[in-house]
Image (cartoon, rainbow, N blue to C red; front, side, top):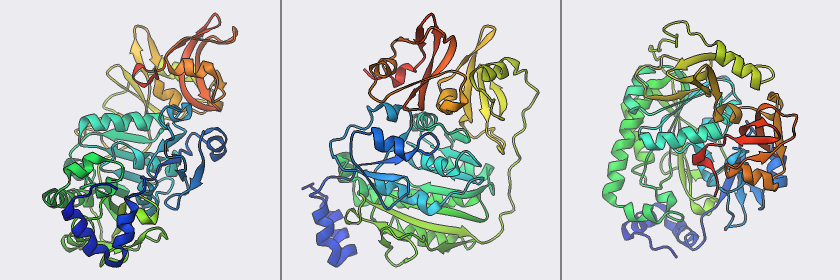
Length: 444
């Protein structure tokens, strides 16, 4: 049994009343483990046939599954490196299910690191529309960027910007906005001892104040008839229902809508919101859905390059790697060449780390292709690709950064795939592949 803070237990007993014994009993059981299929890169059958543990569907998303084996080592698997799935506690998928992104929409994930919800949104967008993922803390934003790249997102922007600056400059731009707010983390107690150590009533109050400020910022970004979803991984009424009620009092342009899902249970005093407790099949989440019912007169200028660029070498590189080059505008930023998503707003002053896919980096008289280009591709897109079985020793060699043997007829750049899912690339010559798998991602 986990040692829970006394003040927390008192609060939960008052909230849950007759359900409190079941809540307390849930802490004698381990946290739920799960994975979420990435439909941008992988089919369910590939996971089912190749993951070395049992997967059971979860109620929180059609792409989410429980892992039955509690000691499963997920992060070391080749298909994880390939971005075929994302390791995620199943109830964490609930907020994006309520957000319900549709292909072609513009979507903002305002507090996005490490990227679980952003990559779930990307999978639902299916490469159509625009996903903007923001994280104010720079080192966490870099982790977010790495996950966006690993899961092959082509229509995304990653930024590290203060929410109020971002949302004021992009006011009225987004069809849907997700605020998965920093919180006191009570839903993480079963798997994170540090969350227990950090918890206090004062911390709860500080989180609630910060959440209110973030929501006020987010409200600016939502276009008329757009959706704002607020979520936390905590049980505190002050951070959940009270925060939503306070927002509605300050923002008459928004109305609370029913989440329209069957998982979890109604919120406290706000029946249209949803609460998920450990006894509901997940570690813990709260979700509220709000609709902007009044006009938002603001709208940002769309992106326009300041000057025409010579990107002939970049276009030649793309053509040499991809059979039918993607119809993305190419932009050079210093030494980097990017494949831009469609429908971008102006990017200046928004702390953008990357827009779209990193095609390559300029060298003397050439452009070296980037890892992200191959991660965003499918096997059938490439002129040259080697696909290895999940348990092939050569695949493990590649993921360790070693050279591997390849057929003699292969020359130049080739993708490396696991069970048909791209996980990197190398350069072939004389029956050997010189490894280009990034050093920071290699297994040892």
